[in-house]
Image (tube, rainbow over all chains, first blue to last red; front, side, top):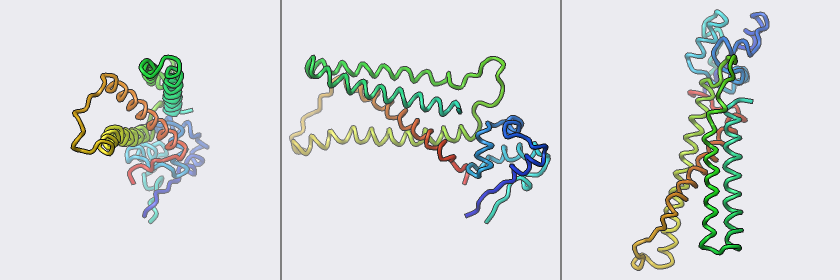
Length: 68
Length: 154
């Protein structure tokens, strides 16, 4: 079974220590969802994955990884 | 605290209070007024009308911005609703079949007469189903938020 990982926390700190709240507002979700994403407890929709990648100005593959 | 969690907690409290009051009132009325009038206790099901207060939890005050409900919350809400419907179906099946089985076992299939159902039963059954639905929905919501699931499309 494949596991979806992400580098959201790393990317937040690389972008001027962006807060979870700020990322949530810019991605159009609640802070709880960002917390769940960072803890790998939630798999986002493709739409949300693109929105998060767009906030950081990177591709989806640079944010999310699929580990076999 | 997330509005959907507040909503679930509120519904849970309303359902538990209603159940306790209906049962307590029934027992008290049974001793005080006798079995016929004890059924007046079912009037406490009217408290379930408080469940209509749900949308208030999602209102934003003037000037407040930000997302109230996002895709994860909707997903949790949808899954909780599916669970709640399953529980209601189970409740309905048991509630409909258990009396039938009891009557058949007692009387034998050939001797079961055409059933007479009091007009009190449909509303009582409906109210019970509403209560069971919201109980199951609230518990499922709280469990999902506590566990941090569901895991999306996997």
